[in-house]
Image (cartoon, rainbow, N blue to C red):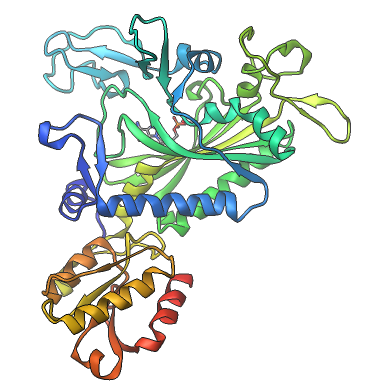
Length: 450
Ligand code: GAP
């Protein structure tokens, strides 16, 4: 049985050190979560898997790590100051605030009063003062998407790498949104991470590239263990599209709380590069962009055949790390009543701990020394975190490592001292086999490389 119940996931995440409410000892803060010892490893593994498939396994994508603090000019010209809003409704009776789409039958979901304000736009961007004087004259935004800094670095990157379309720029990092009603655990939060690719193409080839990236991204989610049966594609209705988009497909997943967006794959046209470009009239721009008197540069590229300068179109697959983690945990969570255990059947490349090395008796120094030696050798292979589990209760160790998704437990026992072999227990089959110490490194490496 896999998880469809959010409470089961929340409880496992807290119990086993994946995810905690942020600022917990002071009562927590809504819409903020911390990733604990297991959560941080899972997140790193998920981000590495994305980076590997988007940057390392291709030859047409460069990486970027830009600042979170963003000039208001960037977000003014990108359109976010004007349009990055949700419609906010206040309940005059209980003072609760809602997004308009959460109101059913014109009734406050909390107190059921019908005494509600008309919806008004609420900008989701967080602002912070820059410098020692907080008089409102100098401020920055915490970026609401990582994408804008990719666009404003377009010239730096093309100048320093000589890239021409088709090529992409990838970035993983924090984004911040002052969500009116954060909810559903880590699904809708105020601080989260995005994995974004801006892929620049020649106008006219954009629709083919859009399809290409949609297929790639669906395959990648499947490779992370997300069941394709629980994925649905939603083409966003024209009137629902973001201000920059010509067409967007949302990759929807059946989360425990319902079918919701896991990732968006948008055709952003030439809107962003066009909006950040000076002297826009010199170029053909298909989008309706506002005049830009602040930009110091032109975000254009030369067609090597025609020698004409043009503004590329952009295809953008944009995925949330937290939503990815939630989908992956939901898929992996398995209750095996027949075996009286809960087990996280994570893909091995995502498992927070790759192997637990367990000395059978915690106080036996020979066993502990040998276990430490095995741990160090496996750790040095660089495939992820290997840990020593020296609590002395093998049953509890197996239970814990089943619940955090450790693919193998390696037990060092008295026989190990005599014949230089260890017992390896497989998480999914629970089968145990004896492996010689001289073979354990290659056994371990080939397990994770396959
Ligand atoms: N650059 C395009 C962009 O930001 P988006 O659809 O607003 O598009 C992309 O966000 C992805 O970021 C979403 O598909 C989702 O996975 C994640 N995301 C957005 N808002 C989020 C929130 N409040 N909490 C968690 N993840 C969020």
